[in-house]
Length: 204
Image 1 (tube, rainbow, N blue to C red):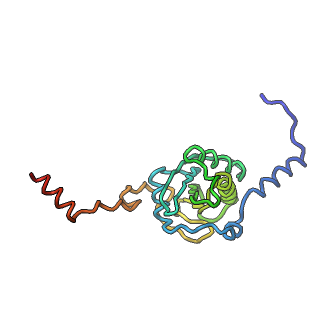
Image 2 (image 1 turned 30 degrees about the vertical axis):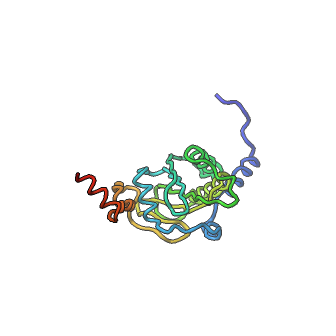
Image 3 (image 1 turned 60 degrees about the vertical axis):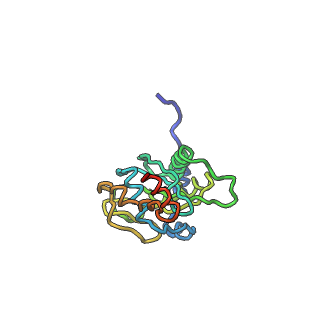
């Protein structure tokens, strides 16, 4: 049992007004200079294969300068109403769990991206705005560049603020095999004098 006083109407208004500022409109996000993903579908497919997100699941991932995955984590969030401050804390907690911070660097090298699987269509919602605010703030506090915010719905995936998207994967699709979700590593080189010497030695 919890004891206390019910908040006054003024306090409630102040709290809701504060929450309303903890979100970003699409125009604000587009003007923030978020770096573009070179291969968004590969990133989305890779995260979808690893984490198999269901609606209300967020996947935060850290990419190196070559867009290779350094670390990722997924968690569910059913916060209502949407609050960017709460989302920021959840993202920061996951980032601290899976990868060291880069706060000692003068310029961020690694980039964090967020994939959020949700119900509804691909149009921007206030919940998306709160996730954008949370991602941007969490990146600042962890020494990362703020990267793309991607929604995953039954219609497919979409990089908000960029207009890029696709029909697969979507919120109800089965994960792709890793062979198609990612480019396999190149085979080891063969041939040359050293290889010929080893081949002869093995034949003896």
